[in-house]
Length: 130
Image 1 (cartoon, rainbow, N blue to C red):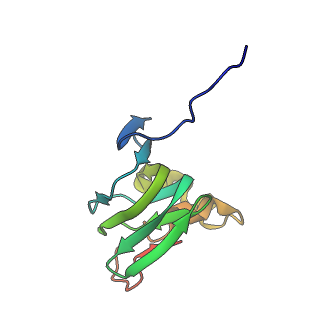
Image 2 (cartoon, one colour):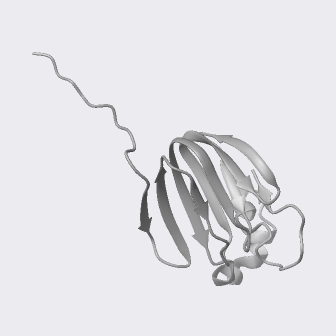
C-alpha cells in the first residue's frame, strides 16, 4: 500500500501573533503582496522560507530564504512578488531594556544589532539594513 502526502504549501496570506511586550513575535505566511505600515518600533524580519522583492522608499531589493531584514521605526515597506514566503517578525521596546544598556552597548556579540538606530532619534538617509 502506497502512502501519499500532500506537499505543504501556503494557500493564502496568514498572520499569527505570539509573545507579549517588550518582545513580540509575529509569523507571516505570504503568497500575495503585503505592505507593512510604518511603526514606532524597530523590527527584525527573519526570512524562514521563500523569495521576494522588498520595496522601501530607498528602492527595491531581492531577498531570499535565510536573510534578515532590519527596519527602523517610522518606515513603511512592502513585500512584492512573494513565492510562498514565511517571515518571522521580532518587535521589541528597547526602552524596556535600558537597565542593561551598558552591557548591551559594550557587548561584542550580535545582541547590539537589535538596538540599531533605536536608542537615538535622528534623521538618517539609509532606513534599511539587510
